[in-house]
Length: 512
Image (cartoon, rainbow, N blue to C red; front, side, top):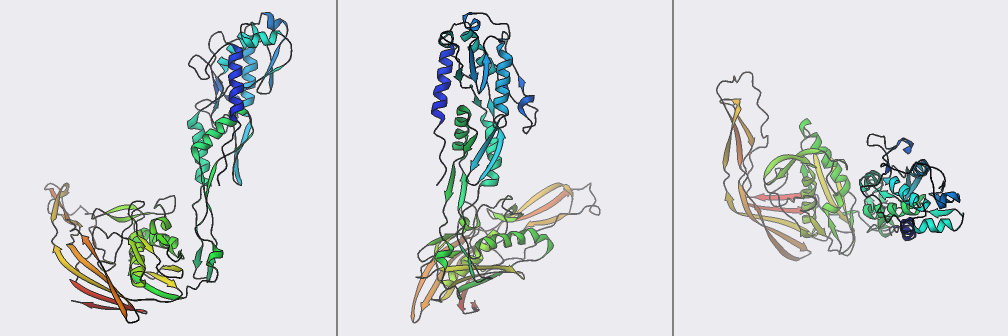
């Protein structure tokens, strides 16, 4: 449960309203005519607020007082500091405001906390308004003045304060970036042979935290409990205790290149695989690969590598994640899992058979599987020795599975020539190799003992345009020009008919 927003702000707001009414000024804090005390624009946010700059309008209240209230030596207490109305007001209000703004506040979220001065949190004190209200009270020209004229007691007045939202949000966001944590369900560690513990997710509720700071500034409290949303894990280590993941229900392997130019992609393969490895799916439950892998961002460790976008290879964060998705899809296919949601690539992938691939784009395109068995299953992912291998593990193998592919339409690709006026004439580079388009039917034959049945689906891969860049500058020499590297993928072709049966540790492949 998230910590609640402070409910004490009502009393502070009522007190501030009474102060404005009693002063007779009827002023709104922050109006254009008022002076404010705030940190200077160029100041270090960690610096003490005693270096703050103050703008006070003409007639700010520093002249010697005169009037019935001053004659009686009446006093008020502003933010814990006594203000003597018989003395010049401006220096006293400035001192009270500086003391108030330099005081530290502790902000707590769960077991973590940080401290900052009120000024660093964005508190702003309208000094001019306060001085003007006290001047009216001193002259007896307000309800507060008449109240003070009746006696010499020290009257408590809350300090008027505003909040600079952008300053406060900057502090909160910096803390939130360190504090927030994604929920993680328990996983099975295949190396250790035991479950890994779960951890709850936590999320600082930013704008409710902003409201909590505003309430605390008005109430003058020195500690703020920030609202936090806690997400419980879907699966705990205790729930995994005693379950058997010793049997391979289905598996698949795909190759990857270990050439130096593929290093960042291979890093993404290992990172994405580590998020999926050990994931457990209970009977009847679903697993979303996007939820398991999470956002592909640099903050989470992903690097720039080639990705497929609308049929073209471009650089993008997290390139390589789709190979984990495709290999997981193929392993799930041969394990007999329910394939709830899957979208093929916009162009065939050379590392996997046509029809067994799956693409994922966070958060819009997902691969979702479901466990149809009466026992939990776990995904074992390894990325090593130029192979990505995914195994679906559980208590027992249920099905023998056969993949049947029938390509019933093939479409030639088009070629596009891009003229390069800053290249020498005669230089050509194959920037993107063309790939034919395919329409196919995919069948899955599942056999349990002597009972067999078939599931069918269609996949469509549009043709990929071949792009050739050609130099047109006849005044440039080819000898001194180094052309960029072209598309190194080999030509792609697919058999019209294919049958793949998985029997234990072997794939039996028939083509024609």
